Length: 258
Image (tube, rainbow, N blue to C red):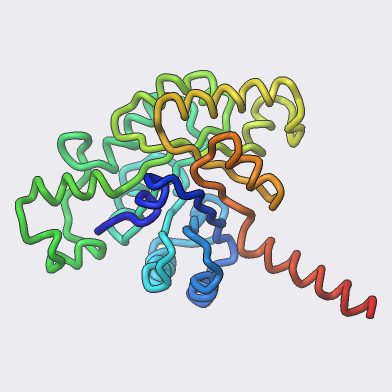
């Protein structure tokens, strides 16, 4: 039950993923041939429910791409279902308070870190995988170690309490959402604004000093390297639908021109 994405980041590899907004098992299967490290199935903005998400996670596992899921909000059901179907990383958006993060950990981690409901679901081979053949506490410890939790810093409120959030036991990293963060700061899309830059740099510095994983989103290929240069461990580049449309647009322009 090793989390390959975690292993890569621990080795210092710079991992790249993408959002799944269009979806479908074939999309995940095709991405397995691209060299991408991880995918984020987006239940916040995407149209997916738990059964569809499970099918995409199955294909990601077969394609050796780490399956991550962004849920809609911090509720026990949202967190528990995604872990039971096999999500290896859970991202929760719109975090504003430390209390939300504490609840996130409580729902997602087993005893003694949290109060996750016990079930030998899909990721545990329904109780027949080797991981379940030892003591229950060993199973808990393995799940706690290999399941990564990323609160998303995309609000002014979250940025203001980021020092407290990264100290929460069970938080593995922070996912920075530049677009929503800039909007929350009153400078939507203006990433050169001093207001945005001050908050962004403060968040990144705080995460790195706490020795937590730093994940950042971008639509720009050039910014992928820039974010790695400032210390990001993982960068989420664009989405399945954006890359598809942009690629076809570029190809069609070339075809029409010729």
